[in-house]
Image (cartoon, rainbow, N blue to C red; front, side, top):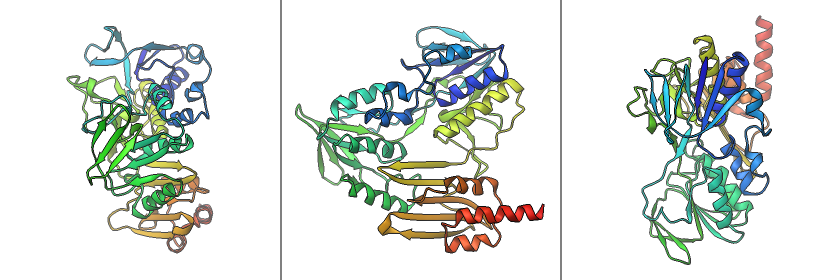
Length: 418
């Protein structure tokens, strides 16, 4: 049996390792486009600040890890798929055959259609090579403008502050991390960043980037101009799936997969940031571009590739935890609430603390929080187990920080009933 994995990120590595565990005699080939060994993009900010060297970003540290595991690594980029022929083609002309294929090609940055984006001082922060160029441009005291304050943007943001650059952030949404935080939570994060010396513009679009030999000028739609030595673009990502045109693979937001992570083409599976898999909270499908989901996708896909679709996927919980300059924000599940639902909230603006719990009947279904991170495991557990809270629901509505007490209380009740 020959298993081929297109991609070399967290989903691909988790799948490759699990395939060898489940089917030790099989041939496993992993195809990666980057020059380096598989690495985590979430570690790039630590590389930018000098907290880790390049090797510290690698998903597996041992130089011969994949060789020892019996995983063949091929450097190349998959550019097309022939489902009936069971082959993939690479950019260099190679063709690789497979018995079963996993598409784990991840995501790619969204580049806004703004004039001036082609200046070499305008950078993404997606690859290690991007980070190396930014290190040269973002010297201490440099003026930096970051376009975008989403999840990835707020991870990168900390790097610029620690590098002692003068940072301005421009976000077109109504608040920072609008897809993760509500109005109060996003407002607290903005206030926190501003207290650390960051200038933040929300509800603001970049109209153009003007270049002179001496500097860049970021022109905003409100007429303001921000001078910069470097511009970092972090305006979101999208699944990397263009290579599937004409392949017969069904795509929507991402590659559509069933409960076994299988695509619409026989013997082809998908996992990670390119896959549109089951959402635990809604029962529908969605792209959850976070590393824990990618890793879980990879392992489930591997189990089904070996076990002939014997492991249904329960769905991934939409979960984001973000540490921005020491302030932890998070969202879990249906954090915006559900129709006919109920909620409880506590807001301590002066201490940068906020928590909002969302309920469906007496079941916790989602949460938003700022400055509370001691019981995130408990929060996730209550949502994923869907345990009825009973009287604890009203207690949590009055005091949402009693999560640990509620967890113990409902579980003790369960033990008494059983």
